[in-house]
Image (cartoon, rainbow, N blue to C red):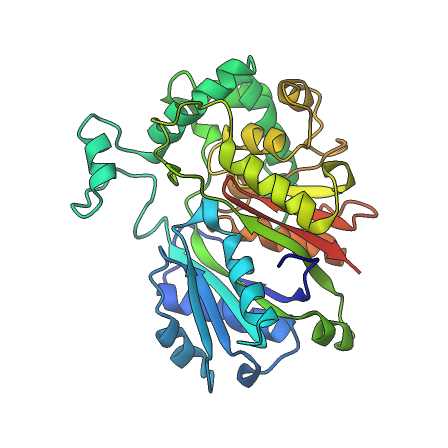
Length: 380
């Protein structure tokens, strides 16, 4: 995608976001997928590509059977999980723009609360780097990210209280979103500061994302096809990913500079070049927020504020309702649900369609960002 993209997101689908679905992961995946296909105004036979993450336990071919897709011509997996979530759209664009597929289904589903909980310590003898760190007592994602993010927070003069101001804003968005786990439940800064420490002095309980049972899916199609459908067109203007040498999805302690987000800056530079846009032209954003400390790094890295000004932006309420740079208007992974970041992408599509519960008036350009990948969507 060296030029503005020729693809569009034509369908989105999701299940209810719960803590105990009582269903198989494949059932959740199939429900979200069928809703996305129907939302796109397509039939099962129109879908000929399937894309998810390497961490997804749903087999492409099992999903094909569950949905009754007559013929699949393209399958692919994006690396790992949430921080690489939006690379799935890059893979879809590659398939469509090269003629390898016409309509690609992106899917992600799990029972991440009632079954395998990502936030709990686990043992995997095949994952040597992780087990090396675990032998030293680094056994949960909260510990990992707190250790990784603290140098950036220190350099920007940020404390857990600053993260508290951020979480209050995310929960304010969630409180007005009927699909959010924390719908109708805003919090105050005092509530945040009273929540128990998880990794002192960086993360409290309310700084952590949800553990969710559920599924979400998308259909990506050719832009010309989307324009002929008579439905709202959400164009994928650009999508990029970057993995500098030595980069890890989680374990970046040996990089020479933990304050400088090298991966994010590579992605941002390529994204603005690809789309011909600047950060000032972004109307609304979603930022991957498995932990509250993830947001300031990407917010600054993608240029939504000047370097060194992220603390003031957060304290000034600029990311929340009424702010100048609205972020995670669904409540994010902290307030809505944790679907490895893809529910944030669904919110960007809703904003471009004008159907979000927290609709930003006049929004025409959306940024959906993680550390190692991001995309820009446009409303036509």
